[in-house]
Length: 400
Image 1 (cartoon, helix red, strand yellow):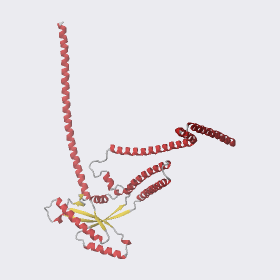
Image 2: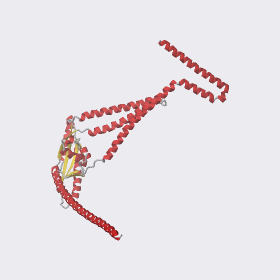
Image 3: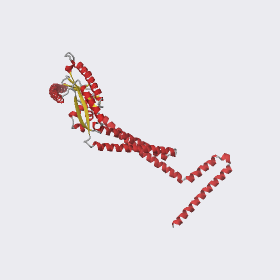
Image 4: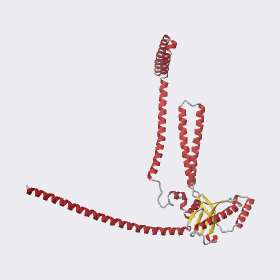
């Protein structure tokens, strides 16, 4: 008995020893895995840092080369900054006059005014003319939006007028007034549609050009007269001086009949964009470039779910309008059926209502009178049926 017990103890110990050895090997393997993973992460971080440094150096080189090509540093405070903040430009947009259509006296006055303008100049200026093809895309978008609103209002008025016609609650004067308003809205919708078509045909002609006239006024940092001023102070002085010069030029040009205004920052950006992208600007304007996010470092496109939500809202609105029209037509057909049924059973309904009136007023007219009146009513009903059968028989014989 004791020998058997010893054998069992030996078996238990051997099994326990095997389990302990397996656990030790598992712990060693897990420790080696953690060390390998840590080394791999460090290696990946080193590679990422190197690649980011290389990309930053390449980006800096590209950025520097682009700025050298553009010949200006920045556009801010209604000024174009050049040569590392040593030169500032302010631009006046001028509205030209039609000199050829003027009389001799008007031409002389314009020339005298222009001579006075040249004599009042105390600083250099540059006259710049930029030719642009007329872009009607923004006008078309505005027209389409307005016509869409007019169309929706016209459809609602049309449904309202149809409901008024089918109802007996409106007089002829009210129906005539509603029809007049509906006709006005229809004419307005047709006019808007034709206007869009004409504008689209006009926009296809790329030979329609427009000339814009500009006067460029410069200011140099050396004119400030001090080397102890920082860049912000120089920029503030340059803005004040350029603004004074531009206002003086605008006043002098007014004597020639030429109106001018100082371009704002966004207008200066558009001017430069047209100058550097003359061919592409006709099809891809500045507004589209800004919406595309070309002035952003990262993409600022709307979230895909927000776009999907807007599209679903449009689909829901469109289907709801179609379903409402369908149900209105169904309701109209149901009402028409009820009217036809009531017209066919008009005599029967009249007899039933007359019988109800006699029964309700029995206490006033007396029971005998009520019964006699009902008998007369039944005789009239039977006589009408008999007359109807004779009439139908006559019709049949006539057809034969």
